[in-house]
Image (cartoon, rainbow, N blue to C red):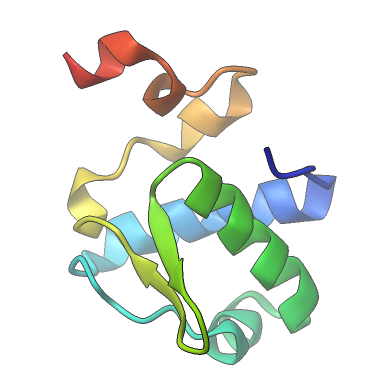
Length: 96
C-alpha cells in the first residue's frame, strides 16, 4: 500500500479528472515532467500521485520508462470515488 500524502491524493484525483476529460487512450505515457508542468508542481508529488493510481490499477509503471494509463480515460472511475476511504475499484463488487 502506498502511503498517501494530501497533495499527492489531490493530484491523483485531478489526474483522473484530466485523463477522463481528455479521453486519453490506454497506454498513454504519463511523463512526470509533463504532468508536473500541467499541474504546476514538482515531479516528486506527481510521482507519488502516480504510485497511488498504480496501487489502484489505474496506471502501471515500467522500469526505466515511467507510468502509463492502464485503460482508456473515459472508462476510469469518477474521481469523486477517491474521496471515500474505500474507492469503488477496491471493492470486488465493482468488477461484477
